[in-house]
Every structure is written in C-alpha cells, then in structure tokens.
View 1 (tube, rainbow, N blue to C red):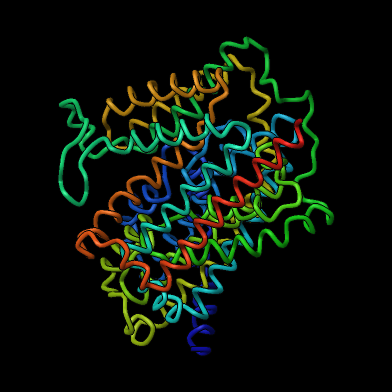
View 2 (view 1 turned 30 degrees about the horizontal axis):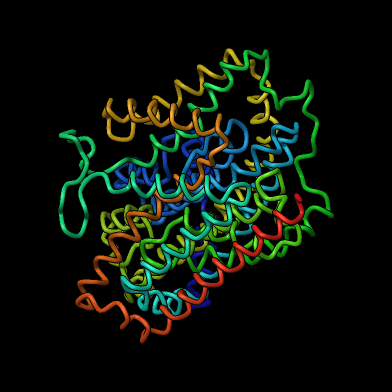
Length: 496
C-alpha cells in the first residue's frame, strides 16, 4: 500500500493532473456558491467532459469539484443568507449573524479553515482505513438508518430554545410537506393535486431558496435602507483567525471531522446530516450554548468541518463496496464506470495507481480550497456592501435561475416564491425556518426506512432491540431529548 501511495503522490504532481485539480476546485467553489447549483449537479455536468480524459486526471477533477462545491455553499450562506447548498444551512445560522455585525471576513476565514481540516481528515481516513470503515457501514440497514434520521430530527428541539412550541410547529409543518409526492417504498401518490411536478415531492432547492433567500430579499425591500443593515462603511475585519480563536475551535474541528467522516460512510446520510449532527453536538458540549445562532465561530467551525469531512467518508463505501454514501458519490460512481473502473478489490490492486492518485488528490484539492478561499475572502466580502435596491433583485434573479435550472421546470420557480412568502411570514412572527428544512431533508429518509423496517421485520418493531447499533442509536435519541429539554429549562431560568 505504501508504494501505491507514493505512486499516487507522484501522479498528482504531474502538470496535467495538477491543472485539473486547481480548475476543478475553482469550478466547485463557484458552483457551490451559486444558489441551486449543487455539488451533485456540478459533478454530473462535468462527467461527460472527463470521458476522453486520462482516468487519473478526470477523477482528480471530479474529486476537486466535489470538495470545492461543498465548501462554496458557505460563501453565499455567510454573506447573503442564502445557502449555496443544503449542507451550508447550519453555517448560515452563525455566519450570517457575524456578517450583520460587520465581520464577514472572520466568518469566511473560520469557514475556510474548518472546511480544510475537515476535508483533510476525511481524506486521510479514506487513504488509510477505507476497507475496515466500509465494512462497518454495511452494518447499517433500514432500522439503523431510520433511527439515525430520527436522531437528526431531535436537533429541532435544540434549535427551538427560544420557543419550543414555535420550533415544533415549524418541524411538523416541514414533515407535513414531505408527505407530498410518491412514496418511494409503496409507490402511492399523495397530495399532488394533479400536478405532475409534485410527483417527486417538494424539491429541496426551491424550498431552501424561498425560505431563506426570497424572504431575505422581501425584508430588504421592506426596510428600504440604502445598504443592508448589517454592513458597516468599511469592512476591515481579520480574515485569518487569531491564535485565541483557533484554540476555541480546534476541539470542535476535530470532533466534527470525526462525526462527518462517520456520517459520510453511512449510505444515504449525506453532507446535510454531517453538518447538522456536528453543529448539534458542538452546541451540546459547549459551555455557552446560548451563543449558538447569534454569531459564534464555534458553530461555523462545527458545520463546515462536519460537512466537508463527509466528502472523503462518502467515497469509502463507494470505492470498496460499490455503495454510494450520498447523492454526489452515486454520480461519482458513474464517473468511475465510464472509465472502466469497477469498485471493489481490483480497484486497490489492478487499478491501484489510479485509485490512490484520486485519494491523494483530495489532499491537494482541500489545500487549493484553503488557498483560494482565504485569498478570495476580501473579494467575496464586497457583496455585502451592495445597496439593498441592487442586492434584493440580484438575490431574486439568482434564486429564480437556481430553482429553474434544477429540472428546467417553471413550477419550481412558483414553489420558490410560495416558500419565500411563507419564510417572510415566519420571520415576521418569529417562527424558525430551519426546522422546516431539517424536516424536508430527514423526513423522507425516516419514512422510507421505517416502511422498509416494518416490511423487513413484518411489523414487529421490537425486534430492532436485538441489533446493537440500534440500541446505541436509541440511547442517543433519548439522551438528545433529555439534554435538549434540560438546556431549554436552564435557558428559561436564566431569563427569569
């Protein structure tokens, strides 16, 4: 294995591969930062381009796009309250608050460095311990994936510390939305109102853009201020975190990187869950949990280290067992197959030089991400100085393009504006929009895996108690409920 790693290092630094890694990282950042253009879409669009390329160069470019796009989503999330990807929603909660305080550079700096370390950690795991971790992922069947989704949904309680009732109402509304469309297990069509565009359910991207972007644009239009209320005349905040700041986030980065990598190897989990679970865990162990959602750098570090750590983790079951960890790695599988590479043992023996070149390239991709992210931070920050009468229409235009480009369906644009109106009303009455997004992401996973579990065990749900991982997950769910309610009770006592 050591000799193959050396071959991979040598191949990565070939000029051809180096150029495609840099190009892929830049394209990935731009794709991720553009609302509606997901990492999945970016990898899918460029797979045909890599068809006539050398397999090593093509796969290195796809890996770089994957890493860059997951990070890129944080840029628009921090600056204009518009998550470029669903993986950056948690980043937005604290990142946007820092921007409102005139510290967008600091938020971007923390995001970039956390993304770098999270990505590098998962790349190291992919390189050294792929086979054992992949075998562990096989232990996650429908019951485990159902309980993992339920565990993710318990985060709604943590996020509802201001008003538990309003948070739960938002969460249940989000779960209600997920019942629209075809049920993936039974094939039943529900609540489509004869709209064929709703057969596949409420799409995440239009809902996400509407709830956060369009509602923000409406608020900007309503305020009629010359500039966004968060912006100071001159933004001169520090991009690189101070030593004190880095000491605050180093433990969070490590723990979130571990969580993100583990989530990545679990089939069907994805970057969103990695981000949410990492953020929630950081809030639970924090000595100042009340600061989360108000502009703490720890929240940004947790989310970005968690979602970027999923990148390498999701490739572990793909390369070893041909099991995609998430939607992006599923598309990535197509990239492997068109080059005649079939995941499995042969990928690490007969095609070892190509495989190890891909794995080593992820280290360089994350390094490029760090360089371009920090170098471009001051340029990115200029967007927040734009007048509201320019920025608001720009947000609406970008949102419209992002929603339409998903499937070239104008109905998704209508949905975006509907959710924009819903988001605007919710902000007016202080209802959190985040539980809705969390429910839209995790609801379908929970429902489908629950039905599969019922079919697998013939309705006898108590038999899942015989599965060790299920017992651990049930314990985590109970612990999540208990600690969340205790924290809410503690917060209420402080306000009295």
